[in-house]
Image 1: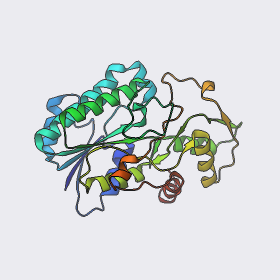
Image 2: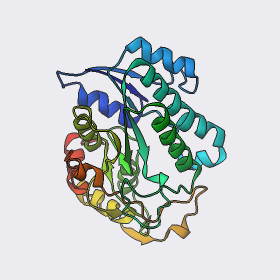
Image 3: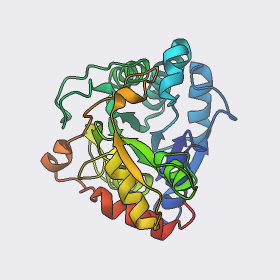
Image 4: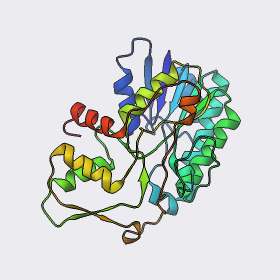
Length: 283
């Protein structure tokens, strides 16, 4: 099976290329901005035709949440227009499309959300990703949209890497938000889930976050415990750290579609974090 990965130089794209390399039944190729801008429909079609993939995993996105608020056009160009173009190219070439989306498509005030709950984004990032989902559904019926959240992976950048760095430094106690709740999720767990989806006939929208839940404070405490970091951590409220884009208070994602369709089971977030530090001692 020929697999084309967009956004191949990003954290998730790098993980997919590394994790899938040992799969004898897969032939991999990756593209990024170096090869061309997917917001140009001719470029998107040319790149897909050049690789003739059986399936495309679409990771390319503008994911800097705060920057999206001040760069609205760029966010929609990358997350909506680019997704629509890759979906149209997939349809025209007969490729299956698996596209990565986000918990930010929801308001984030009443999780856990199932795949059947109505999205209501509160940020430009979330709205642009939702627009991308809608473009994919419109242009490529043979698709899977996989929503992920609180992502970390080898080489970063991620919350895990930031906390590892800060935890190793001397200084006053670290204040970490304790009133936002979600599903910490490793790129490796997502990669395993995507491989299962590739080998299935699944269609539609799935949530692909790790099981279990935590606040950023609880997540930090577990990172420090596993790394043996002794810097003090204290809980604080989101209001103490205002950001341009509002953060969801509760964006937990329920894996209902995985259960209903007898698809893969995602690991508990604590197990995934232990595996991450075992596989990548330097992060």
